[in-house]
Image 1: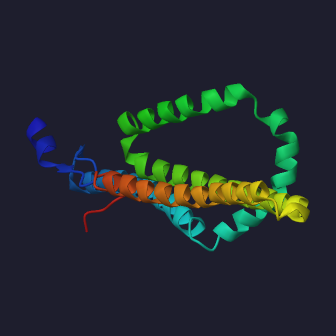
Image 2: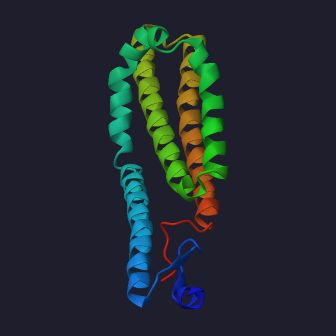
Amino acid sequence: MTQSLLRHERTCSYCGRVIRGTNASILEINYSLHTKKHELQGDSANLLQRISRITGKTSVKPIMYVVGYALAGFLADNLYKIAMPWVYFGFPPVIAIITVFFKFRAGRHMLTYVQTLRLCADWLISMVIGGLVGAFVNLVVGTAPFYTNLYVLLFWGLYFSLIVDMFVFQSVLAKAANRAEASVGKRPHFGKTSH
């Protein structure tokens, strides 16, 4: 009996697990069900990756800039109500813990996690840039009568350099995320097929 069971087994090409069946037809059914599970997991991960790539393109960034520009006044007036200091101190450790969890316990979803984190950070930075531009416009309009004063021009230059720094930060973040995606993408996970 055990010899007949040993003849009807097949190794999964996705995860390396041995699939068994009592006869050849049962083995094929079990193997098909097992591989279908991997395909469904891969399709959901690929769907999230496609959404991330589509919405992470440059065409969405101007929308986020406009949203940030429009919400700049509201956020400046209400930021102290919606973001207490504990949020600023608590947010980085939470992201670090989630990243460690994905790295060691849910490695097959790490690429999707990195892409989602990149997308959220890119959108937030785009909104911050839009808000800074809105505040810069208000600054220039408010201090325009004093443009002959050297300190006003210096202040404008410093504020404008802050906006440029945010663009540079966004570019550096995109390059770091590309490196992270490339390093995560080299690891085999269930969503990728070998053929």
